[in-house]
Image (cartoon, rainbow, N blue to C red):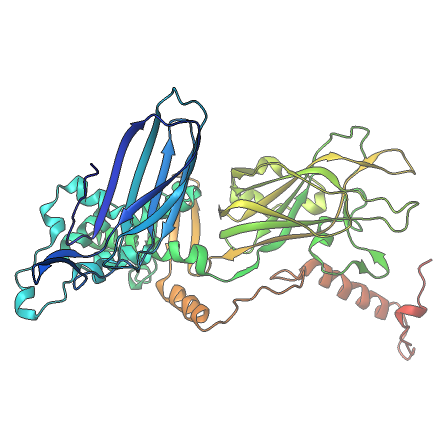
Length: 495
């Protein structure tokens, strides 16, 4: 006999159990049999009333299956059918040995919007008799229920149900926990500063203590939305250093940010110095457009030398990415590119990606990170591992890159990170006004499409200034009254 459970006034439910069965070898399917409604007796016959059934279509029910042999399955389904028994398929599992018991771990989790599911559909007079069921639960159980909310919008709605719910959500930092679960990199943040009128008055460096937890709740709830809602853009601002450069500045790392393939009739690319070791690595370091960015993918375009015999492609074998912040911000005042010095040891890398293989092809290659990464500090390192191409002129291995892109979401000016070298702490600064501006623009469809251009957010200033200087020197070198004639690119030949 299979027992049947009847539940009413359900906001959250979890069914968890271990069951052992002996099955014959073969494939099996596990399904749950559920019926939404209340069994009543009407006119002498049993019937199912669906009068008070509501809220089940707001979020999907999650079904899980796990066996002792490591097989597992997950299914999410909306419960839309009411009044009738309905099977909900979870998944399949395979039994290889009929002499070994199969242990099935079954789990149901149901999440419903608190406002819709809790407020009963009754008259105001009857609502006075309703109670807040969370107040009747043990604190640990109430906290466990609310921790299953997987969206910051749900947490905000839950905190608006009653003072009891609000206290559980805010005092336990559930919005912060939600952010940490999605982006573990945020665990390095030690305090939250919400920009307000208190920050603008001399002598007020912090907000009132009784509002600190609430402001932190608001900041992390907004940050959780920003991680996925802010528009995508190109996130590289300026180059910092290259581990080596063959001919500076003609083959500088600056060229990797220029959208053009050729500049002044010369191929635009960065080239490493030659090496006899095909395993010698190279690194490129870039400054991102903000101290807080969510990076989703990084794109590289290996350079193909069309001016050399057989048109070789100077790609690397593999590539790896790191993100982090400087050990000391004062050290970044040094111009590593001009000095042709490597700045790898000047940073603390808080994230390191897996190693991706790079194709030996003349195209923009896309490297999508397994999960979006929050870069706290605003610096990206690209590590090029292994060399595949020798240069015929000197017999040495080189790596050359034509273009680099980092695509993600820029969180500033709504959010920014501030580092304190004295206390070794990281502060999250939150501007609610700027956050509202960005979200309104997103809702209206502004800046939601990513351009196909390679142009970064900020144009390489050094190239533009150098071209202006060259033009000024040309003008000064000729006496007044000399007439100049423009030459078309097709008629101009490099000597």
